[in-house]
Length: 482
Image (cartoon, rainbow, N blue to C red):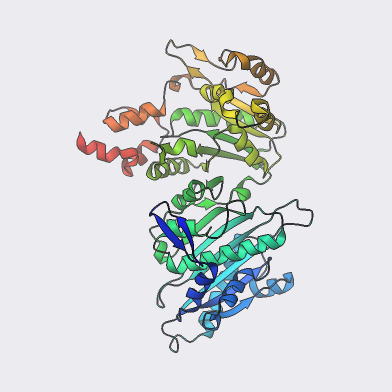
């Protein structure tokens, strides 16, 4: 039975049942490959066996549950861990190599090979850790073509191991089907991973596409879709521009986060980062070697005219990465949600660097009406985690400077603000560069758009050059007009 669903791009369209998806793969006489599943039973391949007609598709299915056996087949990981991306990729490569060696191409000129693998940890007995895993497929779409691969990381949300196993089986079936039949529409392929699944069963927080059919795909853009589609709350990019697993970057780290629109990143942003960083690493309980700086752009800052301007997002991420920064894209409008998110991965001290306007916004009650405990609940979540705010001052039109001593919050919030200020939760960045305080990214953006001169000097070294070279923020198109 097919479900009918609304597809944002088109109108209404049919979702094939899991059985129909598996059967379509099974009845394709050219698709042939291996299933290797560790940690949650053989849940994906079960869908294909049950659909019928699997003998022409499934070369082998295996589940090397015993660690010694698994090591004997796939080798030993340096970190002795089994639920890792490196492990998954070893599994995929090993199984594809075996098929290539064992199946004679001359005899089967039209076969397209694949290996599907997952390595997961389901919920523990104490139900303390919900479980997570890596899932991937390495496959061809033509017999003489190089292999493509799709690799993703999942976090389970259900509280029952059996339900998690079933969820994994559905996801795996959707992935294999999408890989073969939707590879030319990767955004749809991504959305269809949740066919017959709900967002509260499973989170996908990292995905990477590679290979000839995906050579024009920017994985950062695909990551943005994960947040945009509500599949995860946040995605992260390393300075080299590639997607990274947030858990791997943030685990047990001291975190200093800067939120902004960074449209584009200015000298003020970098001064705020450098000065707050100097203060942060001098704090007790902060280990410089274990400190991670995060530049965060919230999705509410990415929405232009109500829709997310993807090109604009790419421009900002690229500039920040070019400055050697790690970028987090989140859908946390409120700061306390960002701190809660970080708290999943670390108990170490955290810092937030922000401008005066940001801090005044935090003390606006309208952001917390949905919480039963209102602003006090939000502040409990924000500040109890040993958190400190590093406040960057603001220069006013009359050349006076607003900082933590003289900023104005709503009269009802005054005493609450004083409490946090008195307890050292809000500290001023005093060693700021006075000469750049009047730089605002929105002014820079206007100057770029209108072809005015002089904006280059407002940006960190190399950024203006990149904007011109890559025609970011509509630079070149506007230049042609003038």
